[in-house]
Image (cartoon, rainbow, N blue to C red; front, side, top):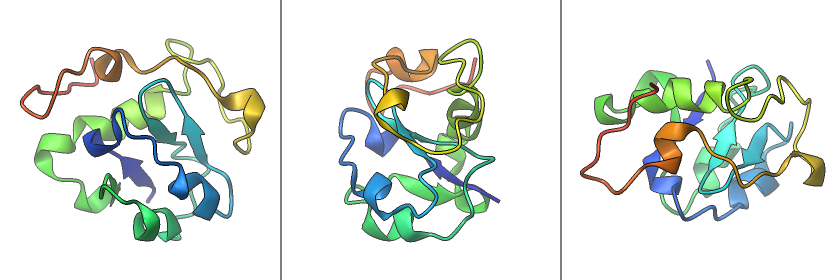
Amino acid sequence: MAYVIASACIDVKDGDCQTACPVECIYEGGRMMYIHPDECISCGLCLSVCPVQAIFDEADLPPHEAGFLAINAEFFGPAVTGWGSPGGSSPKYVTDRDHPAVAGYSGPAASVDAA
């Protein structure tokens, strides 16, 4: 199982999670960070340093944040970045793009669907 970054990261992007990640599976989008589900080794280091508690084990993702499981995965696909599985974050893999659900996110009261 992978970890998932959810709505609390939107417009925060603290970056401590990237620094803590030993496999560099956390990538920076325009409004939030995204975890590549196939690269994550589920070590939990990112979870322990996130100042806004935006990271969850996918099994513990609250129901109202469930859409972020697909959002994190789809960020790497052809509809958003087209990066596939880059094999580690680097300056080459930073973008101002976001998953459409994140790009249009307007606050905690809004629902987020992986559309």
